[in-house]
Length: 405
Image 1 (tube, helix red, strand yellow):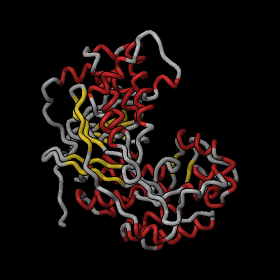
Image 2: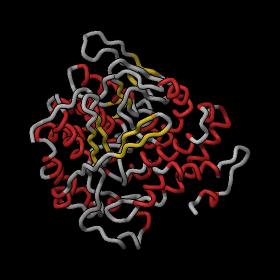
Image 3: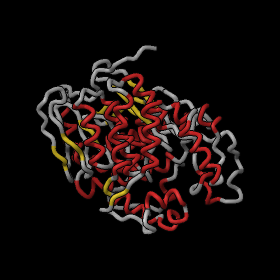
């Protein structure tokens, strides 16, 4: 299959009919979108993280600034929003040199793996949704981790904590395979170019942000017991704190090999072999066969319409798109755009979230369980109406009230 280039999926377009109604809802709903923790590649971002604002990506004139605690970030061309403003800036830098939105996303993700290693990185996985503004074609990529071939149903019977901590808790990493799949279809810049900012950060050092600093402090005892982690996060025997400089030389070497050799360096090469050795030494069951057999999936994206918005997102095993759909459809039953404003509006929204989270417990991986009925309910206007009738403006209820009947 030849490389297909999507035309700038971050480009702006004329506002649709009813856009005034959307604006009335948008400020009240920003809390909802942040709570559900869904990442949208789009034109606006609501939140209080650092986000880079740019002007015309295709010209030499940029109007950029770091927005702190901004309610709304707008651009005529593109927005890159990440957990760390440094990574947002790296994504913008890819667009400046003619990169596609996917180029920016890959470079941003690699940066996050360096500065927020406790929450992201090439040892993990994720989801990605890419929509073309010119063709409306949607590419959904499931790059979540999978269980190692040696995994079994009773592998945690003797140690329940190993589900969450240690080498047995890890899956087969999918991030690199997924990022490469998206880049192969949409990328305009060389694969190697996308790695350079992250490599530089890891090799030359970066300032520890409070987010990472808090995680280091919380896991200090664990870090000090592990030679590799101690070398990175407690290089002088004392855990790094926010504001100090962190170097991750070994990660920079791994990123350099993957930049030069592609994902093969990870899934069938030196980086993967070293990973397997480390995991086995720590008591894990990952093998090279696991890495070689890993494949991303490209399911059909879910498209929902609610409150004048069209939302395109991942299907299960992701629950975010279904969750947002159900909450918005519940709130839509209030008709007025003032329904989610003020303290009463927040109460309604929180109650809708509680009901959604209770229903979400019946979701799972469709490869292993039948969730068709739950999916149908979460997309159903009539089901949302039933939930809205259970929300009272003057009270809340014990947890069991929210469980589906």
